[in-house]
Image (cartoon, one colour):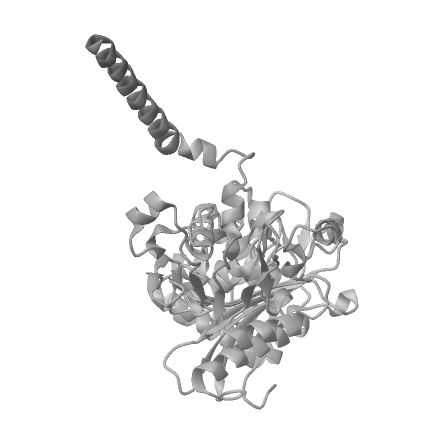
Length: 496
């Protein structure tokens, strides 16, 4: 009898070990596959079972969470949703996450192990951490001035601190309220359909995901390339530039809207945007040097993140001489995001150095303990420091004497470049109005802000559309806001 008891006990032991091994296999080794199974709603329910962490602008939260009492308990809410939508994106229970809500999802949802005081214990117990906070670099007044300046027009604004790369404003219009996409009801589905079918594309982030022909604002790059290459050594010396200029290898004549562009100096050509001078300069500099300079400013960079991805700006690397001439004045296939053009202006203001733009200052726990912090990082040296000083001089001339007069700010030095970019079949579309600029208060040691503005549907007759008339006043308002924030009410404080 004892023999049978021993056998039964041994069998039970084997079965118990097998049960424990199988349980370990399922709960430990196969847990990820079960967690990721679309039929398993436990993770989704757990994800929305606590308030989401907040996105912070200048010490104030611009997001929140509301308790619905439903199975997916907490829904995302937004303060000034349309104003900050190009930055926050949306967090939708039906349609996922975008922009900061996506890039910083682990922090905001509480999934980041760095939020846990005892990460190993959390792994064992599967406990949730409270969502952390994402502290942005935005200047709220600059953000609002950009948004109000664009108004009902389609366009975008990007503003950067030249010395660090901190993004101070990122606006795209028309915008939308991301709160419309929170929840699971039929109203959310209707909002999603309406927003996606809207011809004005309110969910398109034009500041970082739309590229435009930069037009004459690209002449900053061409001028820098010409100075660095030694093609131009004196800003005031005449250039050998015919007017009109026959594009090499073609019968096409390139003309100017400005007068006296024939053999104009670089200074005059930059102030009054002589196409013929810069088209010929691009050819004289050559394709290799032009593509190298464009790349150093940030063109053709497919890896840029702020922390979410940015559409790459394009400068073709295979061009004949006629195409190079047109590309050198920001036409042909040259395309850029507003953020890229703000980086160009920031490089001039920052001594030739291109800083990596970033939108998140730091991430913290719910209680405020720092999880991660971000700081300045140099991407490229776009031009020699001496060239940068000359480019600052040229851009200052544009505002003080040329086409950018509407960007002038009392008590500050402002540099700028206007642009009117043709597009459409046979250039039939309304031109895009561009303005890029930087500003330095007279009592400060370095420029505080660099801005790029593009207006797609400028409210004027075709012949009157210009970066100086449509985009420069918006840039001025943004620069004033940043200068006032930096000084507590300094240059331009009476200008609003």
